[in-house]
Length: 84
Image 1 (cartoon, one colour):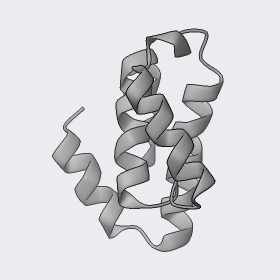
Image 2 (tube, rainbow, N blue to C red; image 1 turned 90 degrees about the vertical axis):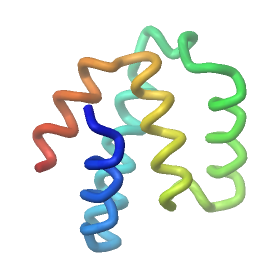
Image 3 (cartoon, helix red, strand yellow; image 1 turned 180 degrees about the horizontal axis):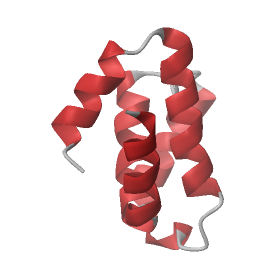
């Protein structure tokens, strides 16, 4: 997974498509039995973004990518490949 390519692709999407992408990555994290592998700092940052209504933003997306890559790198890779 090339992070720069993923972020460029995210920026090319319209707002609805971005939300769908973010929701998909969030689903990977929330359904993972390995969620304990997500660094605490990243988890708290995601929580703060959610509470402030900023989870569906570029920064929120970056945090979710980091979290999903920590706990489910293969699922994340497969999901992102399907989004192309």
